[in-house]
Length: 390
Image 1: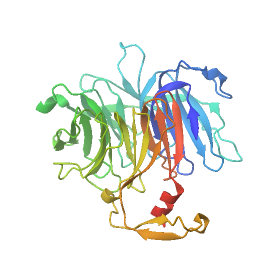
Image 2: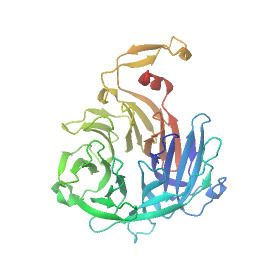
Image 3: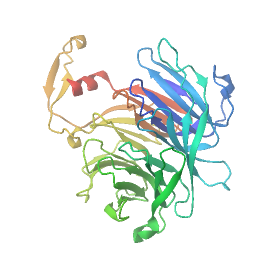
Image 4: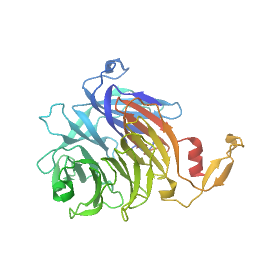
């Protein structure tokens, strides 16, 4: 299923706290020179930028939406883990005189149709609860992350060359900088900037960043490094993601067009390398429930769905494949040995695909976003799904 935004966009994220329906947030980053947004039925346009919530109905293969006008271009999204109407956005005004910052918003009531719970294709409002502004210690904020445990009292804001741990008060009205860490503290990073980051869900005191071609783990308590992989890619690291089910394992994507999976305990070389893209890899994302499923997207305009079962949390199990000689509707299966493979390639895009994201409500659904604002929502092929769950 394809949906076209009316603006260019770079970030997509699931509505994590929504457990019943596959929904995704998309944030626009610049005005699109295409048809006016006013031509969209039921959507009022009051801002040059917007946060859009998409709802995917698998049975009808249909997307419904709710639009939330946003004051600035959106650079990163961090939906709340347990509150569907809370979301952080990192944003920056079109003028360079204003520093980038992160704002926590309360979404107005999400309007749905009574009979099917689809979004009503209307416009809502964002109420800003607090703003974390760039400062000398954390300048150029462009990413923000909730504590993976669900604790709304801690967030990490990532700037151009530093990051800060902020405490959030109970009323969600103020963020206080508790500690910060700068790349200037490490001799190997005198000119590099932080291009990607992720909080380790298995160790709440560890935070990983990609700076230049180096992957670095940081202890939020001591501000010391927990691991360092120099030249993790031959060029800049664009994204990283921890395996949600296997501690110490994470995936990276870089400007060299490669996806690499690492064990940070022994990082002399990657435990797996996937070489399917021909240009920058902008996004990598593990499936939360079935971590052998790994998504990657690139400026070669492609999205790849990988089966990396050999380095998953269940590498020694059996995978089953449908017997081509038997009627598929009968569901007869044949056991075979597990193998890694490229499951599918999605070629529907005409621009760089900057982000991919799995649904948190349905483990078989994922969204991909290209810079021209095209959102594709896909379903894992049925035979692959059955090979995993049966």
